[in-house]
Length: 317
Image (cartoon, rainbow, N blue to C red; front, side, top):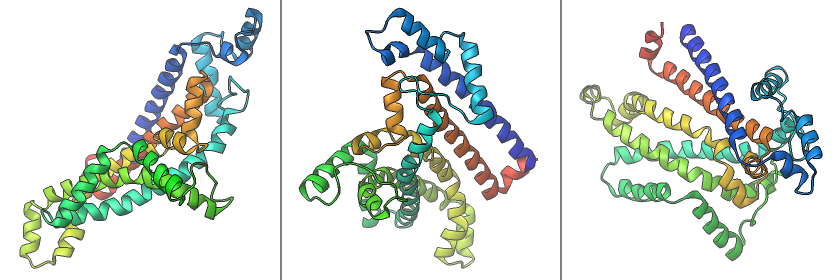
């Protein structure tokens, strides 16, 4: 097990380094001069050159990357925004909690509802319950989230006036206002997770229920509930864990649409403004954080595999 963890950590660090290089290079390949965007068309050539010198944009790419990555590693310093000279680390620390307060409840609700729905539809295969949930799941998977969000705003906010049109209040400021404003964004985010988790849980559980050891357990007189929960579900959940692990980065990376529609000051909005304004350091920092979250989620999935399946632990020795 320690060797397995060490290998995964080394792979994780290597991936993070590769991602940081790719993010840095891709931002430099975007058209447009951030200095010209920041200073405006009326700026002189001397002012633009001085601006680029002050931010190190005229340095060789290798030197720019070294300065950027070394500040992150040594002091978690992402530099200053090209457009407004604000500290990027401060900007992220202000916006990341807002994104998490929408994404984390969505993930929890998606798992808590998706797993039971998948189990029930697998056990009641072919029944009206299975068919009803199949329609709902396929409908959620086939409908874009932004469309559901917009229709909800039109009906619940404009017609029924049950929710606000947009806006956000942090739960540590006013929990009641947070629930009132976040309930629809959280619901829109969670329905896709519910559908994905339920669909994969059902398909994997149906496959496991056809195995010989399940028939043996039933022949030995075990109750159906015990067969499902103790024997079938444990093995059926292994592929589902991968799906849940893939949804973890969506908490941060998939927030652009929701935050734009509901005007939530999160990471998604920050990335959009950074891309349109060619704000290199802001976009690099946000994308790097999203990538690190993705890598960490994969690491957590690998560790969960090792805990659930003893064969993985034995193979890593």
